[in-house]
Image 1: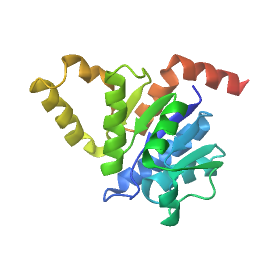
Image 2: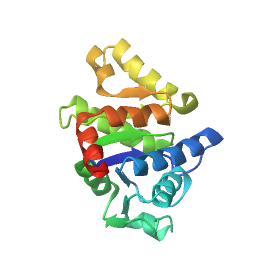
Image 3: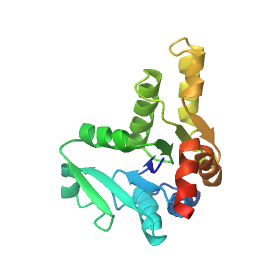
Image 4: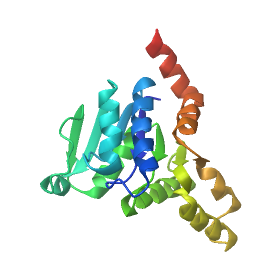
Length: 191
């Protein structure tokens, strides 16, 4: 495992803990030798996680649709920036590169990406880890929606096992380190 996709907000949100979490995630990924793959923005939590990886000497691959580059939100200092023709192409490229997915706080785009990747796992299109970082309860409402889908019979009980919920960035980084593929990559990087 060498690439982790991080879904997060293009805005910083109101809780300072969310911005701190994005920065901590970036530093942690860089320290672990993991390349960040993300939506390519320079704003909000997206920009914060990318900046933290870069400041810590890590690698960042941003993938952004062309229309967003016209809105001047593309992060031009990332290690590599891929410009796609659409949001769908962007999400597909991120999926193809991912060894695991991490969701930090964010808005509608973050929710869309997270639900889609969980749905793809339910459909057995992948078996990559999906980790929700529930900083200060940010994901509680999303988790409630998943629970309602199960309770109302729209999703199987097994849907609860499609993702893991972790309370903070240290727990996410520890879980990533526990994944067998990632542990091998980190060990070889230290040699």
